[in-house]
Length: 118
Image 1 (cartoon, one colour):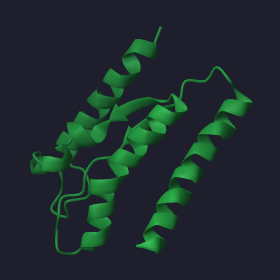
Image 2 (cartoon, rainbow, N blue to C red):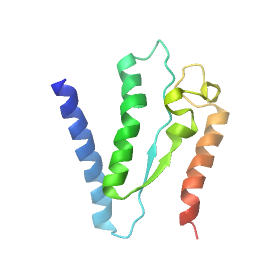
Image 3 (cartoon, helix red, strand yellow):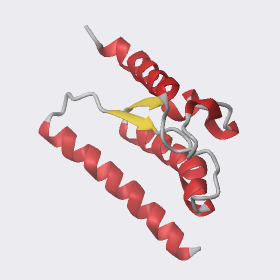
Image 4 (cartoon, one colour):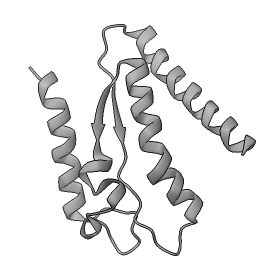
């Protein structure tokens, strides 16, 4: 309820503040935000944490990216997104990457950066 809304407001404010700090130091900087990989639901992790990472964090980071004119690299979708279609990319714990995931992360980040490399 109210506590969660306050936390979301603080998260958004603090994230934007961090971006602004970088821009003050270097106004021409290109800033890239990444939506992290999803967590695959497993019993050892609190469902609330899984819900926050999978259901809320992607939208927050997209919103911040749009509001701050930052570039977005969507590792979340590359690794299964909301439908959790790439379980094979994760170790048994459903959180930590295996070699397949490391490669997908690297490919996704490289694709996002490629237009900015000269």
